[in-house]
Amino acid sequence: MFKKLDPLLHSELRLAIMSILINVDEADFVYLKAETEASSGNLSVQLEKLSEAKYIEIEKLFENNKPRTICRITEIGIEAMGNYIEALKDYIK
Amino acid sequence: METNELNPEKSLQIISEAIRRSRREFEKNAGTPLIIWGVAILIISLAVWFVWKSTDNPAWNFLWFSTIIFWIVLSFIEKKKEKEVRVKNFLGEIIGYVWISYGIFAVGLSAVFCIIFNTNSNLEIYFSSAFLVLIIGILLGFSALITGLLVKNKWIVIAGIINGLGTPIAYCFLSGADMTLLISIASLITLLIPGIILNLQSRKE
Image (cartoon, rainbow over all chains, first blue to last red; front, side):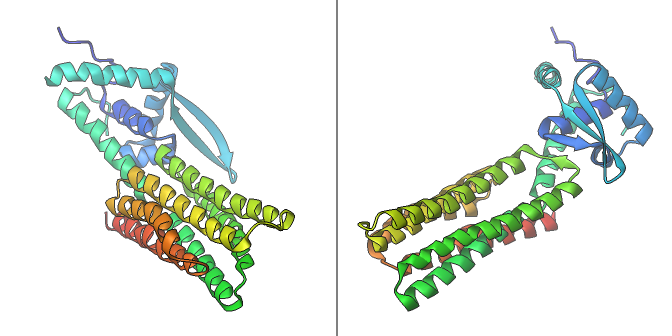
């Protein structure tokens, strides 16, 4: 019996965001946009979804009078990614 | 990139790609702290060797204190870089801490030895100065070894081991000012050259 894949992570852009964030301490919006090649609007929506699920935390601040959005993965997000990868193993076997 | 549904193979591909990109991001200019420390230690060790040799006064070893100047320069560069950095990586942070620890010990030990010499006239300053060089050499090898293991660079790992183990061996055969020349060679092979190699590699990629 295959384990169910987390629907929140089982989408190309959200998985890419989580995969980046699990490898780093933090990443800002500009970096995530460049790495995922997503549009600003789409990226914002997906970040919001991940944040609502408490998979990531978003910090909005001003640096040199410019707005900056910083994203970090949370403990819940790390656990969700772990479970997702575990479930993936079943499908790959 | 869209929000399309995935198949397991594509999911794995996305995860591996993110890991690869994260590593590449970290490798950007990863050699710069090594180059700065390499230049710093090379200059200081050559200066110590030169004045110690020409004056025959081992007290010149306290020039190692000037490491603090390079440390400030390095911190300033790092701070400036931090403003431009869009992503913070654990690995980069850990390597930074390794070299900050090295700086603390190099400067701290120089200070401790300085206090001991000024308060205890019975100590053989000549022996103690060479001993300070020995400790700095071992610490340099230790820090380089950890860095090499973290960045998975064989050259830095081998150089770190040779440096860490070679310094105490050389301590048995070399004496006085010549010990500092050993540190000059060590800074060249464990810091400066690997730092340049790392930066060139990351630029090629």
